[in-house]
Length: 286
Image 1 (cartoon, one colour):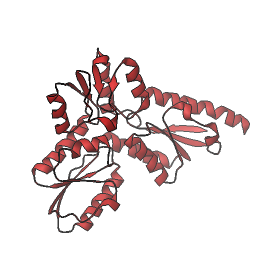
Image 2 (cartoon, helix red, strand yellow):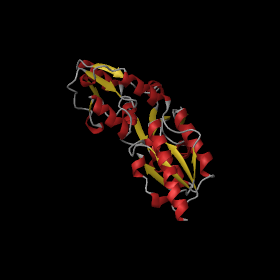
Image 3 (spheres, helix red, strand yellow):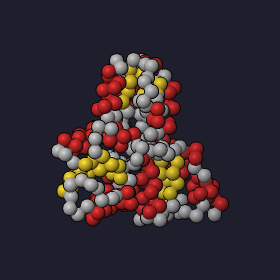
Image 4 (tube, one colour):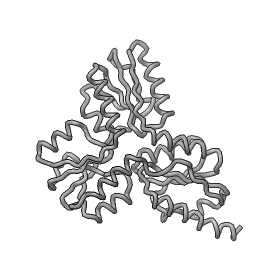
């Protein structure tokens, strides 16, 4: 069995920067992470062992007991940031700069009088952080969510990890169902997401199956899996090498490997090594 790595995979610069900030925190016991730093259980376990506290993603309205609150790479709304500061909390901010760019784009559209449409996952923390500062907003997950809106000006931004093909189909649906509206689109899909998706597309034609490594609640990782299945290439989504099942690979001679933007380099190396170990008994059995 041959294993081919995608030419772009794993950690993006935003996650690397967030992890670097965490390493510089000298009193983790005084810090509560406002949600999950990144959607990666391995990283979460490492931070917990260091002594960081965390607030569940669905319970971020609960005020932390620690004097310091750490804003995750997914960011928060200006309204939430003000709430924390008014409560006397000191903030450590690890928001990805490309998430900040998406926030600013949405606020620009708001200030110019547009009804803002966010292409992204409803309930995702990044999307919530953008939407909470907008008085006129709707979240659109797919073209099936698009309706004729009762507004003359529609502004569109994207969750940073939205696939380009989804953005294209949703934009087309918005235009078709709102022919009389003025529509302004600001592309806020981040370049690392585009690069990961494009690298996977280049790889899919060379392999019979894919292994996708990343957190199960990581949006960009789930979108990599979705792209595989959309192209009818079997995909195994795992978080760690321990989840690999040798029997899954028995019929494949060439397997691809990719990973989401919050997957550690060490995890990818462990998975690749484990795949190569699986290969030997299958060859001898054949």
